[in-house]
Image (cartoon, rainbow, N blue to C red; front, side):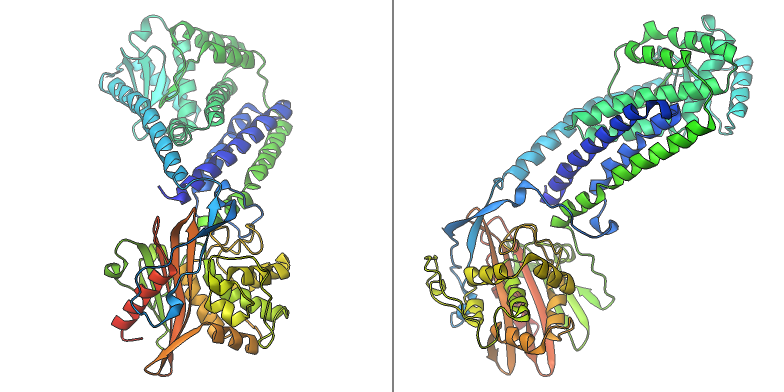
Length: 593
């Protein structure tokens, strides 16, 4: 199961818990200012909150106000990431991988463990839900339709009173103990067997009004939504408690609707009708697809208290209820920045261009979950392998050093002719790192400490502004200056890498031209048969395993420029050098380089 979904579950837990707390607080603070209907309607905000984590982030307003998940906390390790053993081109040293592993606070297998536990819980709770659904089917199969003309006439009168025109089936079944309404497309009002022998016509009328109000309010559909969300959020006890309270509030709201249709002298009779079924109610079940007349004894007591104190709602109460509901809705909506921030860690970048071909290059990516994006500038044409992965944002790792160098040049921290930083004497696992560096040598050997120092000399606001100017991936620096691009919070997709390289190459973002040229020189790799190859590899190592490999760049050939980005993902051995080998093989096949 992908980390995207695990993140959604964690986000869902946070959002649902907060929403339940908000609703309970509002109900307590404003209990005298909420009508029964709006007291129940507040719970519909929980449905919205439970859906929010699964809505694609692009539908939310942009912006990251919060970004905190234990998945992204880390400390640097001095563990050496192994170099690629095989190279298709021994005469080019830029294929070497220079990468230092980061250690995430949570082990890699935790995602799988969480997934197994969640799926196990899902299966455990699906079983009783299926049993409850089969129970409904059994009731429908064994129900006999009522032919009593008096009851049919009473049904029509109740329907007219509530302005319901849909046909409903009234019947009785040996498998029900209390009246209930069930079904979605075809709706049934089901009574216990031989109910006419011990219920008066008045009591039958009250029951019909109650069940028809459930129908009018689409409560059977609500039952299905409750069960679906209970199963999906089985791990959050607050959600289960909330739905228990929601069912009670729904019955109180339905009772209130019935009382509005009755004269005051009939309130007591209606209450006695409900009490009539209390001895027939077993313990409350968690998975209920039908809407029942009766409740558990605990809930029945609260319902009777509400019926006894029922008063006609004033206009002011309705206005107050609407304002309170609006306030609660705003509090729930206030979580959208949190959801956006968390979801943005793994968001897909939606890419749609008419001049794009999607091709099968899977033979080049054997053993890797990878993608390849190529843009022909002269033809204004994209060729993409693996559309889904080409839009998935992942850590840029060392490919981001291109832009750190550019930002440092733009801020004047370094210049093209004066970019040397002194080695601090700390011994790194690569000999090439253990000396003074300038921007070109640091780019060639992918020297982490050099670019970390450059970024640390810039303030976060300046870097954030540059990222926004570029539109660089998710623009998320919450992992920290000097660190966010190393398997942390900053993410970018292969498609975005190509679009940014094109903008960089043509200087479409308004940077100083001499700085653009200086960066271009640092990433120029080699020339062959009149074609010039420029690019940067990147390797992401987590817990001493190389999990993310990049090669991005461009080829200048015969008056045209081809921009490319290759990304490979694996539990191990996803080196930047391997991504470069794959890229070179594809470019050779296409006759580009």
